[in-house]
Image 1 (cartoon, helix red, strand yellow):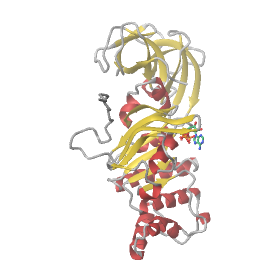
Image 2 (tube, protein in one colour; image 1 turned 135 degrees about the horizontal axis):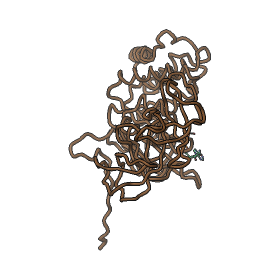
Image 3 (tube, helix red, strand yellow; image 1 turned 180 degrees about the vertical axis):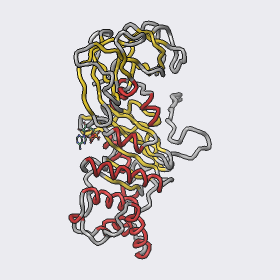
Image 4 (cartoon, helix red, strand yellow; image 1 turned 180 degrees about the horizontal axis):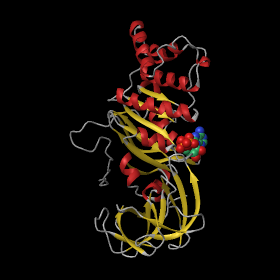
Length: 381
Ligand SMILES: Nc1ncnc2c1ncn2[C@@H]1O[C@H](COP(=O)(O)OP(=O)(O)OP(=O)(O)O)[C@@H](O)[C@H]1O
């Protein structure tokens, strides 16, 4: 008799009685020849939730999105939509709205026909199609452009039309693959604002948003999934991942971060309230992202805007030398090289140059009063 036990991973939300996730991805693996583009990837997106897939180029973000859309066939794992297994369904049966970075509008069709395309393919009656095209164009502020051709629109306008086209089918799931990356900085910022407004207009739609731009992820996502080398490395709510990154990689990828070498003062559990670590000559309270043993080497994460400048002889500061200043518009970014931990470079954002010494002069760097997060050493490429 076969006594082996097959352990199935849950595809639902994991909570008895809870609705299945709008998007459920379980153990998804995609290979291109010898390249593993996505390895054993798990992610669930709830109805009404926006999850950003954030990671460097080549980390597998678009591959994950394409597998959800049905544009490629995974070598293992499955995809569910609202609990329905769609792993082997073609894209047009999945009922998903997809927007990619280079608009992909049909050049020979007017804007209204582009937006109507998915509805006509679904044989939606003509009057209803007209109503939904107007509604979708209205949502992206393009209601007066229906008769234009794509070539008569700016890049930002074309991307709005592409979003309207995806929305016209009223999809429960919207996949956005770097939708702003082809636009210049001003347009990107405008359209980011519009996507935020649009999000509020679509309270039930689950959105998976692929980007390598942390600003977009921070602005739009409820949760961020950080990817690296075909794998999901960290996932949490946007606020928590930014304020309390669990790894050096996520800390540095999600905003500027100083990574200070530290040594753990005593054994501590993850999240322990009384944990302390030695940083240079100081012993400071820390917020451990995981359990550490006494004397473990670790890394203290401090965002540049949380550090302040002080007199080098002031108590409780890390002494160093000011090696650089850079005006960044709203703030100045100071670079200091610490005496201890020797040679460690820290960046500190200050609103004014008042009290900042001359380049090459000694300076004190004060850590924030709130404990900084302590993460394991290593992991930044
Ligand atoms: N059609 C393909 N054939 C072979 N390898 C591919 C193919 N598409 C992607 N890859 C490889 O799979 C890996 C993941 O690619 P993917 O496009 O998912 O990354 P990404 O994180 O979306 O990157 P980017 O931000 O640059 O778009 C990369 O190593 C890439 O070179």
